[in-house]
Picture 1 (cartoon, one colour):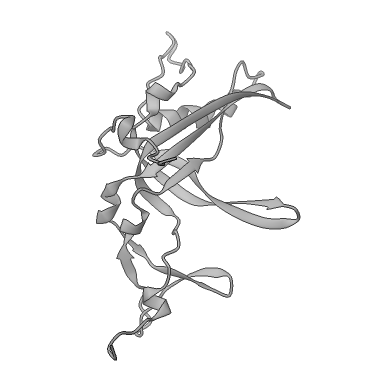
Picture 2 (cartoon, one colour):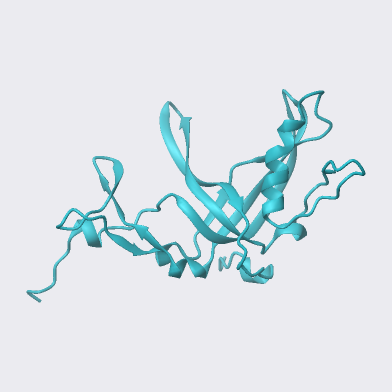
Length: 191
């Protein structure tokens, strides 16, 4: 066993790395909330990283002094590894807001809603004058849809301490992605 070694730079834990990952919509939640802008509906979408992530390479990172830094080899070159460790991981989106009947000059509030769901294949009807007519997106419209999900950390403060959680910030169309059935993206927790 004399030739067995462990090098933290190349063999250490594989922390999640921000980036664009192939994924499928695996969950859907929406609720109506009363906000300072009036009544708004918020959508929270869950994503599961697709098996096609096996074909991707990412720069391996490691923790050093509480910070995530790229791993380098003995020659100072960044270490790249397969992103297969991300396969099957699940992440939630940041809230996507729909403001019904926005005030004069505030239609921009729905831009993220339109762009987000159009990237997931939702087609909103157009009015005679070419405006996008917004409709409520339902779970059946998006579950199993393929996309490229932009993953990054969202920071927040709780009990005076800064914390973070990995979130999907945006999605874009995955042209070669195949839609999966609801069963294929269901959470297989045995309890």
